[in-house]
Length: 282
Image 1 (cartoon, one colour):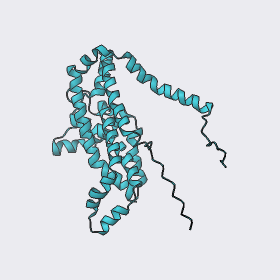
Image 2: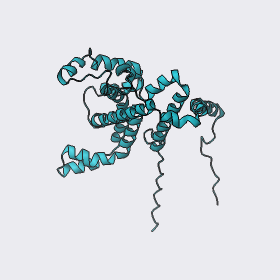
Image 3: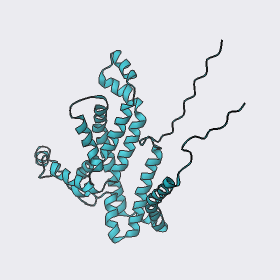
Image 4: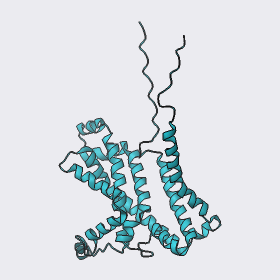
């Protein structure tokens, strides 16, 4: 005899929730549609191949990849420390990691000036010891991009490390492997998907950085003028070209997010486990 089908609770979407959700989607989608509608498609190639845009693109790629390299060098050990080690002030350190994500970018640029500027806390020492002046220099743009982008790597990788069972690492350590070797040969391969997702987000965020860069490093063509800063200038003189460059940055950001497929936000598709088979009756 067949059992009556039971409805899964919550399958029907309440209108009171569906309508605001659709309005939210429309609110987020409208600016993107605006860019697509106002793009001069016939002049897109001309706008994107102009000398100023190509120079800004070259500089943006240089700055973003350097920022990614610094984020990997500094952020991976920091993520491991936050995920695996208990120490006094851990909450404060995690707050410092999250701070650039919620801090206004211009405020971050001011903070960088006061910390690494020529009259900041470390600026005079960097200039006297290494001859390094960060403001109004390409290295300053790299520092600004790293400051705002590295938290994306740390947070995503910390979550991946926290959810990793340490059994394999403990086994490798019991066989005599050093902690560094365990980290490089066991831990990193196991967290590779999370690391790749965090790295992609970090690079995309560094590529689109604007506020901290213009405040800390300035807006010098060929030195610190990245694509977002180029868009800001083009809005005043050539809005059509600004729209074309904005479309390029939008396409890059969308490609990164689509490539991640929800891995960083936890939206990855999880295959349901098969139910265990019933034991055979004797």
